[in-house]
Image (cartoon, rainbow, N blue to C red; front, side, top):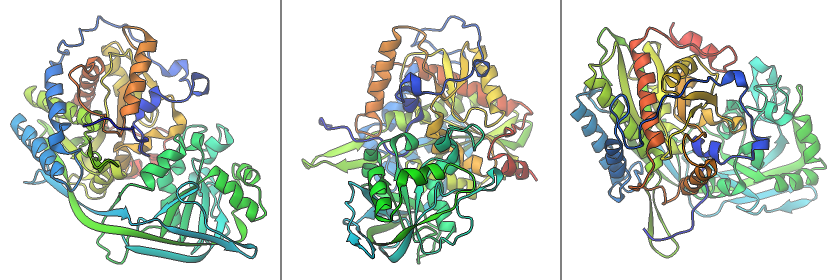
Amino acid sequence: MSAHKPTALSLALLPWLLVACGPPASQQVVAPTADVVAAPAPPMPAADSPTPSGFTRDELARHIRILASDDFGGRQPGSEGEARTVGYLTQAFKDIGLVAGNGESWTQSVPYVQITPAGAPTLRIHGADGSLAPAVPADFVVGSRTGLETVSITDAALVFAGYGVTAPEQQWDDYAGWDATDKAVVVLVNDPGFGSGRTDRFKGTEMTYYGRWTYKYEECARRGAAACLIVHEDEAASYGWNVVETSFGARAQFVLDHGDAGGLPSVPVVGWLTTAAARDLFARAGQDFDTLKAAAHAPGFRAVPLGDLKLDATVNSAIERGRSDNVLAALPGNSRPDEWVVVTGHWDHLGTAQRADGGTDIYNGAIDNASGLAVMIEIAGALHAEGGAARSVLFLAVTLEESGLLGSRHYAANPVLPLRQTVANVNIDGLLPIAATGNVFIIGYGQSELDDIVREQAQALGRTVAPNPRLAAGLFYRSDQFAFAQVGVPGLFMGPGDQPLEGDPTTAAQARDALAARYHTPDDTFSDDWAFGALLQDVELHHRVIRALADGHMWPQWGQDSEFRAVGETRRH
């Protein structure tokens, strides 16, 4: 591949790079001392030495090199790259000695709709004082996720609905007292806890699912809105406008296909507007954006019509329906085979893209997520070689993670194993080729008792455990364990921390910065000079955590403050 200008990060930001390359230390949330478990650090093996369980650099590198090769074309769902990837994973699991995980099948079909922008959308905001055509994509980015080729809305009254949140357990409802049907709803990104900075609202500065853009669209759809427009702010979203512009406005979007040719359950028009555009829009309605934003932080906020302003919009899309495959491989349990631990990792990446000079870039996705697939394969091999475990283990390589966790969401809605028999999910995504670290981050720290298992196993390896310091980014909701959490199954997502065991910490930080620049670009490729210290640590830790779950009797429970506690309590009944 030839040289190119790196593209922006996508909306599904890689957690470990966000941790390393986030705001200055003065702006980060530092874990309380009580939340970090110290352990004596035994001498670490050399970077190329086998781990205590026998994992080696060469075997991890072999899988990553193949899965991230140009021959796999960036592992785009629906492409030849998918066929190669599914074939490779299936054969690897067969060679280990696992059995098909979906009855007699090694796959689960995931129906999707691919929605590609077809020309620039048209927008017009109008009222008694005239009209304007917002600049796209400089100020507004809009699209449609309905699966229809053309979507048009006319005279949709614009209403500011604060954070657009309905959370009964928080005694919060931004939709109380008004009807959003056929309205163009404008909402803030993130949630009232972050916005107010108060620890007694939601989870304080830690984003909940109510803060995610996906939730905003889902709630607008439930309310029958004609449009849902999110006001973008860098800090609240945890990414810049360039991410919205390139990832949401320019790329094809995938959604699950529910088989309704008349349109999918979605708001007709969805999108974003910049903060500057919001200020201008509110001023045209005789309102002050900053004043209404501050009001939206407080309980009892009520939606505010934006004067007599209305929105007209037309969005054209090219629609293609298809099917992609999850890969499922099972290791039956020895004494409690009806109890299952599900290990996930997504196999898909971004495929290829044409450059302006006529060439083609391949998005190989070596870190994201050939690394996770390699770890999954090696752990499956180790568990089988060790004679299995008391409980069964399902290795589930899911598709369409990059498009909104579609493969894991489809599995969660159509599980091949009863959810009441699913003990927990361990998700492996985007492990980093960096030097060994003395700590490990848990994304969603405090969500469930799975933290206790990680703490015990990490301590045995001389590592400390800490929460991800980027609390406001809502990273727990951005990888496949979230789909399991939504149906009540405790999910775990962990990876290397930020304390290098050897060398200059500044040099280590620079190495992470270099990796961040590669994320979701054609530069995410495998190299023989990769550092494998942290990868070997992390495959060993994941293996020990999975074995502890598979041999133990524990059914991990959600934490008292987890938003998934209620659904988790009903799951096993």
